[in-house]
Length: 394
Image (cartoon, rainbow, N blue to C red; front, top):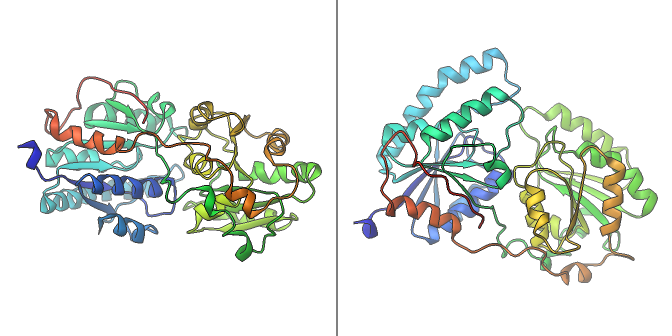
């Protein structure tokens, strides 16, 4: 009977990095574990979030899985195609050994889960966390696979859902954990980082990639300091694999600018965010969602973001004063928007801690309910999703 069925998920995480999808996976595991799911994660190496995943109730299994990349050479793709069947076979064996109920792919760019689920004849939940602009061919392939090999596609925003016509899509926003992101964490980060408590502080928190607009933020520093000479800037986040040379160039630029702090990868993102006066997300391509945006708003920090993708949805529903939207690659406009949001006078830990929350998460349990429906509704085993399209926001 449905009420007594084991609820066991195998989530396939094709990369092991400290990024938005990894942080969101921790929250997904927490939600599912609280709902009675036995959570297992297949990853190519031990993820940086291992301790958080383990504490949330997940068991990690190492499965070699080459990642896809737009910068791969012909030789790289040949090696990927040669390794793909073996990776799927390993996932199938793992799924059989665990007797999983559902297979979950934690990225639209994870091309293993659909095949493993089809062989296992289990429902496949595909988490779409990307807006695909790098390759039209990859987008067409992922659209086809989502239509024919997903029982449910969870899109992290309406912008992501719009690129998957005909797929069985439900929109569920990734929400920050209010016990992790809240204004009261203000005052913990600055002193150890050597940043005075009183200076206005602007920053970006997220992985360093070519499209994240960090170069635009650096171009805006001069305009910012022309308006507020005491403003300082922090850039926090690890570098996406393959973009190390680009990141070194940005770090060198940052080092030449007064009042700019290049922090690298951090495990204390919630404390960094809570000590900002304004968070910037200056992406040059549309953000699929913008997890840092909702984390900042939950911490009482106003946001300046590029007017495309997820931030349009997030800030469009936020209260007045929560943020500004600007065009991409416009450092002067970016600086002007930041200056509008900076509070007059000096900053202080007490003021930052007293800020109101600017975003309240949606109803709890939305993601768990999506997975639970797979047990309560009739499912077609193997190939083919349900025929209807669902959409909505948590």
